[in-house]
Image 1 (cartoon, rainbow, N blue to C red):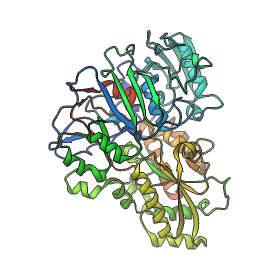
Image 2: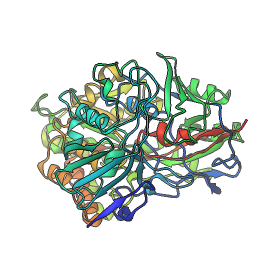
Image 3: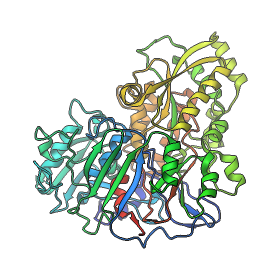
Length: 582
């Protein structure tokens, strides 16, 4: 089959789309306004967003003026601003302002992100005859930022080759995520050939993934340090970075989109505490803020002219376990113990604690109240297997809150008062996440598993050690929200060593590998659901309902250009379209 993707991003490849969204979650009685991005870097939305009539009536998709500075925030300093030296969401979020990819996630006003294709960024087009061999043509005349030593020169194929050497190099943390690409060659200054191990239904999503291939200038090879001086070809130029205080970006006047960005700049305050974030937002010092479910009604009542978006993200909170090299005889090596952990969880309670579901529903607000599987509900019914449905089969029993059966499983193992450390990141994912971490430890203790909550520093330990499988016991944390389900499964089950303590079930490894090259959408969907059935039976990872709920973003009345995306690409995919009323 021959097919082609052009600069419009629309083509006959629609049937190969890798995402499908759940729609309809929103503020009740509403008019469609489009989804907004999260300013804390937690996964992009996949649900339509609506604006309740009593909350605000301004049309946020147009009418703004050119210029002005957009005020948003992040919760902490990125571990590094060099895009290949860390896998933190904060690092990738920073990269999306400064750097470009070959493709990006398309955004259109009022269109759910799950319905959008990847569209060209640095690329002009991508062509393939067989899905395995691709020719990618670069836009001519695109330049890097006018900063020495790069000094505004044109982006060429050599820069792509250099960036490819970095992401596949021996020190790369993401090399295994592009292992299906066996070769990249330059045909000329503006043309590259990519060779894959097998046909891929999601190659363009891979190029658009904000976790992966950011294009650096070749001068980064010894000419300057990307950890202190970011030089890219993206829509924004870093003006200054004051640690623990603020990051300032100014518009790149030479970006290839001649009429964008609309704003003169973006000011990112570094504000760890939600109470301070809210105070700054209510004082008008932030243009947007993600509002926890238990504060939505209060903020709505106080700010009747605010604009809102609601979104079902592709977030996924998992409990994961140390690998066999750490305490090989630990009780969590046994699937009965992991099933007991899962059945100790009150998933409806976690959902309520995280998203205030009942109170919002009682107030007439439409919120999602389902449970995540090892694939998040936000990936949509094509890929998500509802663990409460008949389709889940026998494995559905291990999602039920059943303390009696949990205790019976532990008794059958001869386990009494098992001690299990439970690590989670402190002061980065917000107060709700930390409350859920403590609640999970209490639930496990109630079931007879003496969980010991261990908050660990995000930059120093959690993102650099815990999520890489270097943990003793178990951990609770959010999973990277990949814009396509394939890399999510690959990272959980195929990568070596298994990130987040994955236990290496060969049947799951084989299925996760096979789905990445399955060109038939229906067969691929069934493979992904089979993975969820096997994981639910073995509980290699224990899915929680943290990440499964509807989240809300409030915008100041003057904000225009509210769009939605998925993943970490907001700096390129959303902020260039943002504008403000005077």
